[in-house]
Length: 158
Image (cartoon, rainbow, N blue to C red; front, side, top):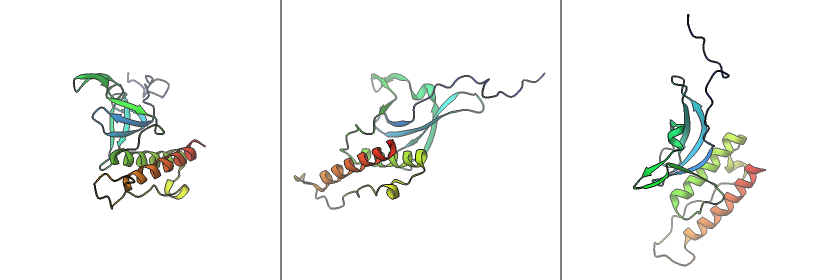
């Protein structure tokens, strides 16, 4: 006698990874999109995308995504959830990750293109001399990005 195909009610419960902005213990920024189930093993998998490079989509067992272990010689989480409103905007990889995260979230949650519903994020400076001047173009960029982020979050949370 064959076993019937499982229905949603027959499946083991998923331990969901909350969607949001995460940082890997090595420093890279990622966005959790959803917790999904492997069709072969029924195991819960975290679907996420890198917020750098080619912005590739990845899956990892949800238990592994959320684990704490000894990485780089100290006990820490593999990925740590961050509140986008509280992330310091002080380096370019973080700034780019923030724009990508908020733009992706707006599209998934509201079907909005932020650059149309709000405005484009501030452009990255191209004229810095690298001497650490007071009032550097990078200071202005991060300040403008801070305001763009606040407006984007207000729009998404409305």
